[in-house]
Image (cartoon, rainbow, N blue to C red; front, side, top):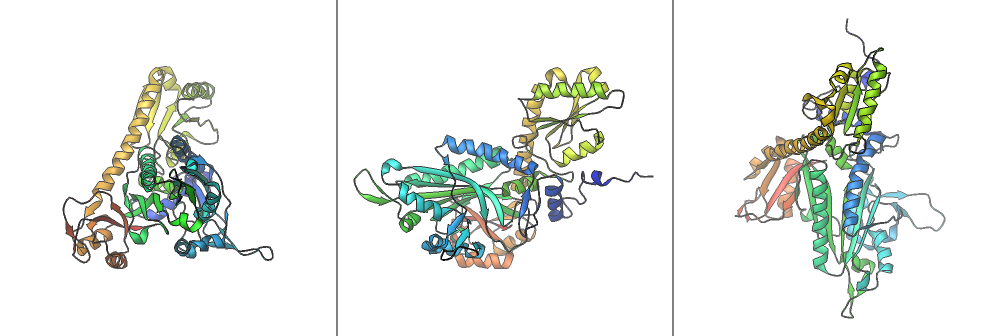
Length: 483
């Protein structure tokens, strides 16, 4: 008779496959792996310790990279005065459907919005702080929370009313410096997403209709998820002098003239964690890239009552040998079987598992198991550190290679609307010529549900016909449905 699993054991497995029901698979992975859970507040989520540990890895790397390039961290209030938002009408109108307002206020107090983004309150301060060219460039970043009163279905990490992100806001004396800043931040995001998260991206400008409200242009990093939808992984905006003129950010230049400053803003959010789960996960759960994994190596001791003491002692010895070199954890819990632990840590996506039992101790070895491909092999303790270094790097490279192959295989050229429509229907990203008309862009969106994810920076080598109207164009756009 098959042994009935306990309620505790049920947690360590998924009930649906990734290929059959991607949406439900994703929900189960995120919750059962301990990344996040639904909050008792509609549209909100709770980021659990394991999920927050992943965010800290992302945050830590990016924070160091930003500081290396002259960025300082600060914090501004979550409350935005309504008059600040209304000062920039285009920006305000872009966020009106998503703004959450504080309804209870003191008598005669103006209305406040909960921060949908911080341009307005930060730029009011900038107008007071900046006086001379000597005060520039100014580069400030915030690690904070954002509130956007989304009305669409809640998806953990992907679409919630509150989420975590970083938002950088810089001020420059020239338009050239401004453009250089926009590209620098986009490249830093690309480096983070591709070399740490192992997710390949397509990078390019947004169309005018998809550009951040009030910006001259937006550069976006777009990734393709297994269900054929595009996911925006980060954005960098050239704000030009628009906000500077609205908020009076002026400086005395070297030539003695008062001038309006040039500005950028850029951000990356916790939706990157959702992308990690979707891109690399499988039917056993998460598969985390080693460079972003809170635990890179999990040690599982295998013993019976007679060998318990000896095996646990050896497991502790192995852990101490690896500490300081890797993110390592010894699972010495008595209340779970080794098999249950295998399932749980596979669900959590730990890159490498080390098994150690009485036979392994006699042979002075451990058994190393890769999470990405399941390959298992014995490794002598003497050479364990070097083998782990090599293995973790191989896992990182393999995950990126697989994700890049998926992106390449599922990004197809469409020479006309019929082909574009077919590709979108078949859950592909379509690469097509576009004449630049918002009318054509709107028609494609209406008929297929796909939006322009980005426009490649480099011009096409030759002209082609717009996928909608047939006009000649050198602009190539990437179309996909989105979250």
